[in-house]
Amino acid sequence: MHPVLEDLIALLQLERIEDNIFRGDSRDIGSAQVFGGQVLGQALSAAQHTVDGRVAHSLHAYFLRRGDMTKPIIYEVDRARDGGSFSTRRVVAIQHGRPIFNLAASFQQPEDGLEHQADMPDVPGPDGLRDLSDVAADVLEKVPMKMRRFLTEQRPFEFRPVEPLSFTEPVSVDPVKHCWIRTVAALPDDPALHQNLLAYVSDYELLGSSILPHGINFLSGRVIMASLDHALWFHRECRADHWLLYAIESPNAAGARGFARGQLFTEGGELVASTAQEGLIRVVDAEKRQSRSDPRLQV
Image 1 (tube, rainbow, N blue to C red):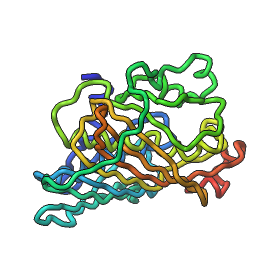
Image 2 (image 1 turned 90 degrees about the vertical axis):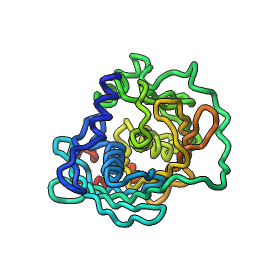
Image 3 (image 1 turned 60 degrees about the vertical axis):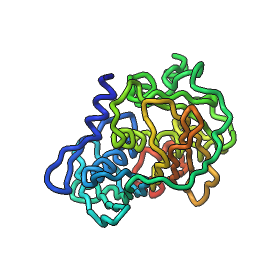
Image 4 (image 1 turned 135 degrees about the horizontal axis):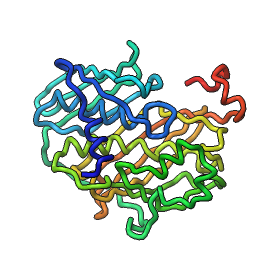
């Protein structure tokens, strides 16, 4: 298996400290704080460790405080309910004695039922599209070092955006984006692992759709963005090592918040998961951003 993917899987598996309490580490992927998808994946993993024979079908989470990448994260699981068909778990992520994140997840005993789904958008397939890391050298010189590292270093997922990307000269476009994603190597047949990885990657790209109509580049220093919440529904079993189309749209931005929702489709057009997220979006003076005393910089 690819070493970077192997490292991510180990990161999501967690260390059991005692019943219902787990510990996880963090990785610096170029963001200013712990990546939200990492905490989502780890919290789901903690909940999964307390459920037998049932599969996660939904999770709803709130990001409360910035995560510290230099310290472990403790996950405390509350076994809220085990019913005849469904189980509910509440998970709190803790650092420095304070909660930084909480999650509610629901698990279901697999069963058959009525089925219908939305159609997959008519967009080009992944073959022939450029990977996110395939960016011209002259563009890389203009982006911050952390973003440059994210674009050029090996990553556990491939990202092949359908629409052209502009890192340095953004233009106003419709708040819609499509990206093909999959892990960089094959994975074992473990449905829980595939759900962990899907939760992890579902936090990529989502909120960024909210600034597309405004011609703002998040690399310019003029915009502050932070996830406030995240919801994920697993509709059908899927594999994170097969191509998935992440179709994202932002129907609204107001009150310094952007709202985005997404759908994940297999290459064959099967809808396997849906997401929704609201996040903070503040446009500020680039110079004032350097000062944490500016109240607009506080989440």
